[in-house]
Amino acid sequence: MTVVRPPMGWNSWNTFGTHIDEQLIKDTADKMVSEGLLDCGYNYLVIDDCWALRERDNNGKLVPDPAKFPGGMKAVADYVHSKGLKFGMYSCCGAVTCTGYPSSFGHEFDDAASFAEWEIDFLKYDYCFRDQNVPGEVLYRRMSIALANCGRDILFSACNWGSDNSQNWIKTTGAHMWRSTGDIFDGWGSIRDLIKKQFALQTTNGHGCFNDMDMLVVGMNGTGNVAKNDSNVSFEEYKTHFSAWCMFGSPLMIGCDIRNMTEETKKILMNRDVIAIGQDPLYTQPFYAHGAKHTEDKFIACRLLDGGDIAIGVFNLSDTPLNYWNCYLTLNEIGIDISSGKTLKMRELWTGDEITVKNEIFRPEKLEPHCCRLYRASVVDA
Ligand code: GLA
Image (tube, rainbow, N blue to C red):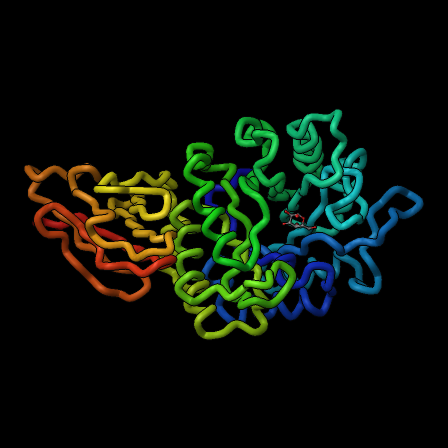
């Protein structure tokens, strides 16, 4: 199967960890539809680690934990599908999963057959406790081949955290998305570091196998499985997080408890204009304005969009304000020469504010620490 846009959906890990069950999944499926998330494009509902019994059955098959999933996985998949959603599950290429449940190494074809029987549409495949004698790329190809031959289209989501230089080999495995960096936590420092790591990785991103920056922490507000003692991410910081994931074209897998989203959380996760940047079908990679003092902490990232618009994101990841003399953008460096008689009309996608670039230079307003502005710009007559 071919995957042409960064996948979108919800994953159980960030909030629920091991505390997952059939009712939670059904309630989450209901909410994905009733809250309008499906309409925004979030169509995969994925159960992460901790769904199985600790032992395989006598035939070597994985067994869903009957205390958590009394009706079995096919029933859960049927329910999820009845809502117009797709259903995802999790396994690992090691001896056991990261939390010690049975893993698929040496059982790839059996497990792919179970996943097909349960009618899943997505498999997240982790990298814990692996056999060090087998290269990572072979481990991922083993499952990729098994899935591709299981008789069902199953999106293959590789999760090896960018380790073992996977940017060099992940596309040989047939994965449709790959975790290019380590696990996210519900803290500003984690969000900031994951953004910065994408600079070096963005050339590996593209159609068919998208760089996964990890599940979103938007709306977790210090609760759940990936909270830290200092989890107090602000609304502005969550906006920066979401904007960056879209600017870099990452898959968008929600990690918060969508049964209890605040209005602020909905405002971020359901901003269709921002989502449209992340899902833009041209799928170009960002380039950067080299205005004065462009740094990894204060930068303007731009992307050419399908249809001729340009996405422009002003990011201040630093702890000091961004002023226009820190960071600015000339039309010339975008590729719009003065002799063309053209300029940009820009709409900020969080506030709706509109500006038209004058005198060939876009100088952002002062931007507080950890904040961003994300614009969609149209080419107009100057
Ligand atoms: C790893 C992954 C996480 C999650 C856990 C589950 O840490 O990177 O996203 O799947 O395993 O145990």
